[in-house]
Structures are given as structure tokens and as C-alpha cells.
Image 1: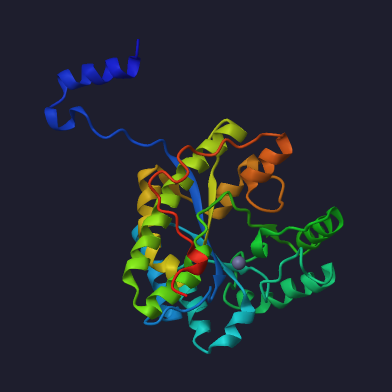
Image 2: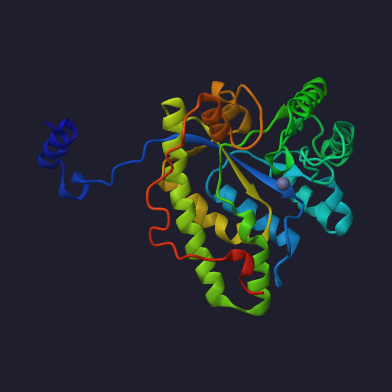
Length: 308
Ligand SMILES: [Zn+2]
């Protein structure tokens, strides 16, 4: 006996036809949005500006009612272009916070030493702190989500961050938007709209699979859908696709929350490399099942070779 079905039938008898069978509401889940590589991620597609990219992100996030979105800054990129400072200022003017992603996007696993890496963290602070007077900027997002390849470096980095008052900004879900960034710039430069359309179809299919996979993996590891933290990047590709990504998250039941609220969940107690779900699965000896239908209608696409 299917009680839900019985209830639906009962309701159908008593409700007006128009509301008898509303689309089932997706189970709600919390998600914090975070945006990396500010002020500039990847190649700039012709016809776009860094300021235009940030404004597009802000318009999309506001349109979807995102109350807070941390922007993680590589302050070293400010010297690339005098206009890049305005990108960070626009983020603050919109009421969103900034935090540290190291000065030069230095991967902890590849840094010459722990000291070299901590120096890069410290060098990244002034441009963020100056724009965050009286607000909490002491979050660190590890470049490439690399939290140290060996125990000594990993523990050294976490001890340094804790002593300096930082919390680690973790990640639970990403859709690999960064993979498409440079190919998008190349295809736009060539005026190859067919390839751009193929990339979009490919990406949005991957996003849909990614959202389903995010829920499935969370249920497998924690027995529930934990509050999520999405990682995306401040590049041209993400600017044009974020509206479609957030539409899909909305449809999947997303409720946008602050990073601190998402990370208040016990799932985020221990920082580390990569996604919190993946590394927790590894630690618990759980093999993530993944989602059926890899390649279910998604065209194979060699993004690295596209529009060369
Ligand atoms: Zn990054």
C-alpha cells in the first residue's frame, strides 16, 4: 500500500483540478555559495570585462536570493590590471564578504616549504582586510583544495591558520566550471558559437548529474543531505552559466545560507583536502556509488582541445 499515492488520490478528489497534482516539491537542503579566484579567474573572453563578470555574478546571486557569498581573493592578481580593484569593491558594495585565497594562489602541496606558503597567506591579507573593516574575513580557501600532501605540512598549515584566527572554508560540491573557462574564451574569440552551445549542453548535463550525485553521496556518507558549500569561480564561463546553474539548484530544493551556517554542521568539524564528502567517505571506508548514467545523453567533449 502506497500511502502517499493514496493521499494524492484523496486530495485529487477534494481539490480543484488545477491544484490536484502539483509538481512534487524537492526536498529542501541548505547551500552556501562561494566564489574563488577573485578578482580574475582564467582567460578573459573577448567582449567581456572583469567588472562585467563580477556584475553578472552579483546580479545572478541577488536574483536567486543568495543572502551571502564569500569571494576568495588572490590579491596578487590586483597588480595585473588597475581595474581589478574595482571587482573586489563591487563585491563589497553588493554586501558580500571577501576572504583569503592566498596572495598568489599557491598550492600548499607544491609550495617550496610551509613557511613559503604561510608567507603567501599573510601577503594576501591586507587587500582583503582593508575592504572588510569590522567584518569577518578570516576564512582561508586552500588553492586547489590542497591542504597538505603529508601529515607534517597539513598539521603545520592548520595550526598556523588556527593561531592566526582563520577558519578553513570547506567545499562539498563543485561542477568543475574552471575546466571550461579557457576553452570558452578561445571559442568566443573564434566566434565558434556551435562549440559554445556544445559546451553549455555538456556542462549543464554535468551540473544536473552533479546535483543528483551531491545528494546521493551525502546520504551515503552521512545518512542525510548535509548543508552544502558550493565552489565556483569568478570567470567568464561561470558568469554566463551561473543563472542556469542556480535555476537547477532552485529546482532541486536549494535554500541559500551563509557559509558559517553551513559549516556549523558537524560534518565540517575537520578540515582537509578536496571535498568534505569525498574525504569523509575515504576515511570511513565508504566507496561512493556515484550517479547512474555517466554519459546519459551528454555528448563526449574534449574541452582541452576545443577551439584550438
Ligand atoms: Zn582557486
